[in-house]
Amino acid sequence: MVLEQISQSALLFDIVVIAYCFMPDHVHLLIEGCSESADAAAFVHQAKQRSGYAFAKRGVGPLWQPSFHDRVLRDDEASLAVARYIFDNPVRAGLVKSPGDHAFSGSSRFTLENILEAICWQP
Image 1 (tube, rainbow, N blue to C red):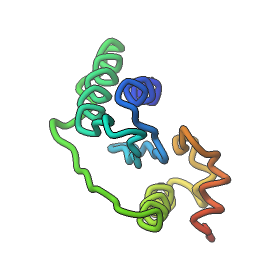
Image 2: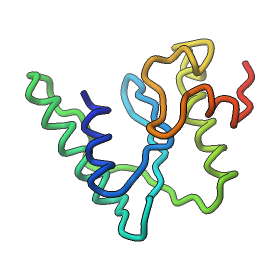
Image 3: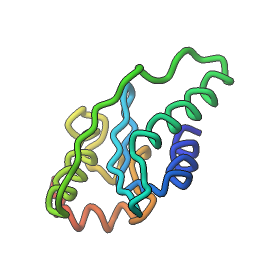
């Protein structure tokens, strides 16, 4: 449900979600603007608002903290390093043995296998 709201918000703001990983208490997103009009801050605001509302309708408390941490990447090499960090997160947390085993990771642009190959993931 949360991923669906994030994906819909990405379309609205001309953003593609290169990598995502939902953890028990946080989420990691690697996003890319598809045009000069892409607005990452507006995307995050809208995604949090839409997913938080959908979550609250199910009778559960607040989903998000008020702020978020972001960083601008300048090249593809940095993007691969961030993707590796994102997909290694559940492994480091001891939730799974391999990033491919985590059901709550993926990409809207690539298959998980493509990304794991690109980052040369080794156990």
